[in-house]
Length: 307
Ligand SMILES: Nc1ncnc2c1ncn2[C@@H]1O[C@H](COP(=O)(O)OP(=O)(O)O)[C@@H](O)[C@H]1O
Ligand SMILES: [Mg+2]
Image (cartoon, rainbow, N blue to C red; front, side, top):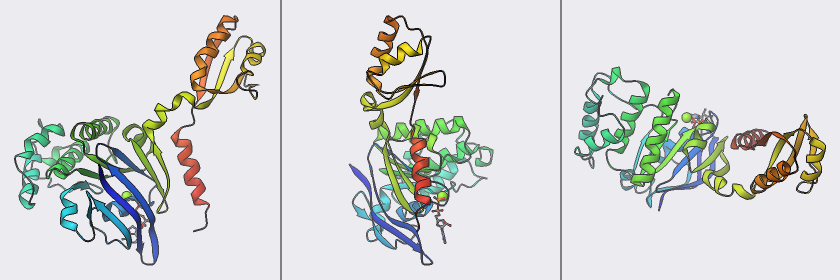
């Protein structure tokens, strides 16, 4: 089910196009990344989703409700944190959640215990927020965003300042929410490695323009037929090269080994054949063209455009 739909969204601030006709969707059960360097327009977009920024043109709908014309119904289905969670440091985690619940309609206080458990804060919920680590504050922020049972969770750079363990815990929690509670998650970050581990899909934004969309798992599923560059190190490179040329006529001796472009699913048979011909293989390396390379080439590419 489609939870978030953004169509041709544009934001102009003081005559400057900050967001330039972007379109994207988030479905239930899906973690969608919004990746881009600082200043790309992530926070601006998220503020428009949350109704905190006026939309210049285009349309945002949440569960079918237009944020501009049906704001209250749209907001019923979305919870979010923009930049850092806003918590009262002298109050406990539970008091913060109770206070927040009392301030908002549609928030069931009975939900609090379940949500505290979900964000793994049960042991510390009665301690004052000022004693919490950043990761714990982040989890209370997410708990707060979940109190009204939204279908869509929107998080703006929630891993900023978290240590690797905190990032992993956040990732596990979001995956649990998406897979078990069917929540859709829209999460921004400027860190590609993080997005690759966390997301099902990623939109890449640069200078207010979406310059790419990547499906992470799809890549893994179709990996079989993908052609990668492989580097072989053997005891008889000349002999091995003759054989590899059957698969890649361009294969060549390079850096004391052989470089060949091969289909991923053919590699095990090729290795078996080389071994059978008494060629000793010391190493086989796949030179993975990662999303990182795509990202860099896409973003540096777009910077050179005249805007
Ligand atoms: N209130 C504002 N007034 C003017 N310019 C703004 C305002 N908010 C953001 N910007 C500009 O919009 C661009 C995108 O900012 P932002 O959405 O914060 O990027 P990101 O969150 O991806 O780092 C930046 O160039 C920023 O300077
Ligand atoms: Mg930002």
